[in-house]
Length: 286
Image (cartoon, rainbow, N blue to C red; front, side, top):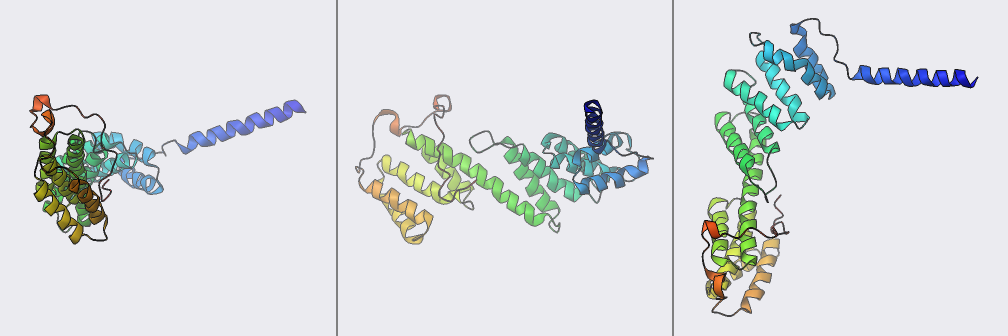
């Protein structure tokens, strides 16, 4: 009796394993013409891995087929959904390079930005791929202004610019805390001059005022901070400016003149960041 029970259980487990394996097996493909429709079905069901398996060899060997551009684009989407950013980038770049007249070209241009942005790192780190994604979405917006993806591209451009602004602001904030006021001013000014459309603009104005006050320009710093308090009363920026204002009012008019603290830093002398600022900016930029 026990033996029969064990046998039945083993059979049930084996059947379950077969069913599980079968769910991951690529369906039978009769010919190349059926690959793209099948891949679309799998993609729509969320079976991105199987869809990629159906398309990967075809994308390489079916160069002469009429639907190859669609296949390459869809393959890029399957990689994108799997967060395989680098392989997605390769496929979208191929669409734009080899099939620029394809109906998929405009979408590939937008999705290439997504693939590049997926490889970017947080603002504490190198922003190479953020810059690449920004450039890609700007080119997309210029080339296909009527695309359904244009509004999304504009949002993404804003995200990229905010991340780049935050990178500069965090560096300036770090130098400010380390009392390297002149270098801090350079970074804050970069935010003000290059990224005035981002939420970090106000943070940079406050940072620049604090650095000025430490460099003996207390009166001008107070003027800036009071203006922010008035213009943004009841808002986070106004509250933050008020805190900075009360702090600066207590500082000596001559500023902080101790040794290194007011001089410029040559690139070779730039101190390595010790601890990145833990704050996210007044506006909480991502």
